[in-house]
Image (tube, rainbow, N blue to C red; front, side):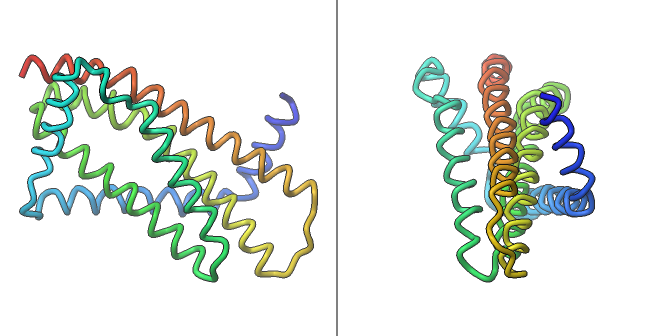
Length: 199
């Protein structure tokens, strides 16, 4: 545990600039999502309504957020790591991160519009911000990990066992954060569905 704490502090300090830049990219993506929601003709609220209606009709058993969330995130993380096979790794990672954060921005606005201000703020806090803080932290760590591997390959550095162990350690921590976010989302979805039933 002491090694883990020491390693994470060292890793964050070493990659602090990159982590901050990726955090800014996340913020930009969320703002883009908010802009798209406000200017697009497409009704995102109807999609959210359909999801809640489906959940309600199936008594929340047919929509398993935990399983779907794990599947979607495994695919997302796999695509991120597969980007290492081409020379455009940084561009692909930034695009994927912005795309993910744009969807978060759109989802936040849709929830606020659907539930109204007071209930909407509660739903956004519980169902979007709370899980996505952990999820985005996981994505940022994954991106820094991949970019470090990419830079090592680009500089022609030889394979080092210790560095590969550290990369695996970061991957495990990242996946743990994402999994924790999915569990939170599963739990808070019940609260959101109960609030939706009262609309």
